[in-house]
Image (cartoon, rainbow, N blue to C red; front, side, top):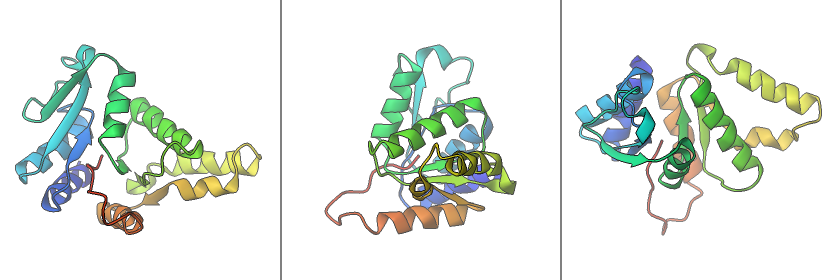
Length: 174
C-alpha cells in the first residue's frame, strides 16, 4: 500500500496523469487517492458492470465502458508507459496481454514490473522458463523491466522516454 501511494504521489508531483482501472479499493485505490491528494490528474476506466463491486473512486475522472476489452483498450490508448503493481489474476492477465502485444510489435511502450518484495519473481522465472524451452525468443527480455522500488520504476520509465521524439507530447502513465 505504501509503494502504491508513493507511486501516485510521485506521478502527481511530476505532472503525469494516472490512467488506471477506476477502482477505489486495494492498491489501485491507494495509488489513485494519493495522486488526487497530491493534486494530480487521475483517469479511471471502469466497465459498467464493475462500478459497484469495485467501489469506483468517484473523485477520479471516470470513463465508463461496456466491457473489459474496451477498458483495456482505453487504458492502453491513453498511456505511454506501464508500471505494474502487485496484483491478482486480473493484473496478471492485463500484464501478459501488454507483453504479448509488445512481442507482436503492436507497441513499444515501456513496461515495468514493480517487483516489491520480489512479488513478480515467479512470473519472471516463468518467462525465463519459456525462453529456456525455446517457446519465447531471448530478445523478449528487452520488452519489460523489473524494479524493486517506485523510484527505480519511474527512473526506468524516464530512461525509456529519453529516446522518444522531443516533438511528441508526453502521454499519461498507467
